[in-house]
Length: 67
Image (tube, rainbow, N blue to C red; front, top):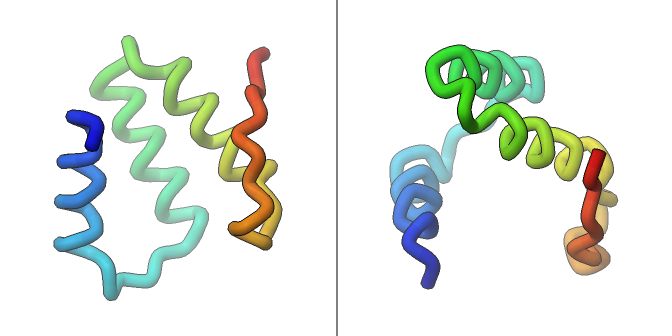
């Protein structure tokens, strides 16, 4: 387990039953970037990954989406 998995585990434990819209998620990501601009590149890459990943979760290839 990576150190960062603890935050992911916390999120899953706290909100596993929640359903959110993509618009809500984008708003939360923008708020995070405003508070932590040093993480803008990582958040932008994550957003690009989410936008490009196929619906079939078994087909995720781990491709790099460098700008």
